[in-house]
Length: 90
Image (cartoon, rainbow, N blue to C red; front, side):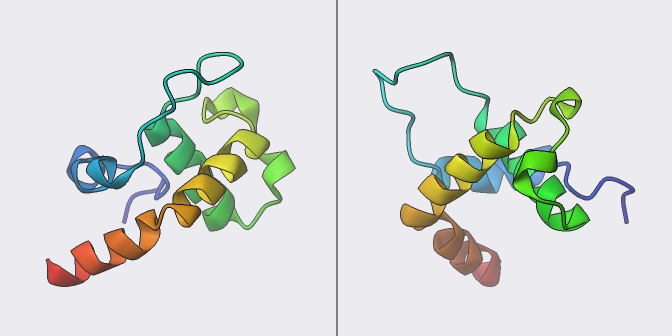
């Protein structure tokens, strides 16, 4: 097992990326943190059982709030249910 299980390798990312909803063309604010980095931030928070606001910015995953919002967006879009079905079929 890797010492950093929140890192998403290329094979897993190839399964997940097509399931993610597209980013809105005209979204306000700065350019968003990449989906892959946000996913890794989400996994870091869950793996380490820390509060969202304690996600260290220096890891490069974006803020805890950013990761939480992306998690919420993906959950509402059914991404994790789709991923679960995809992995079961594998």
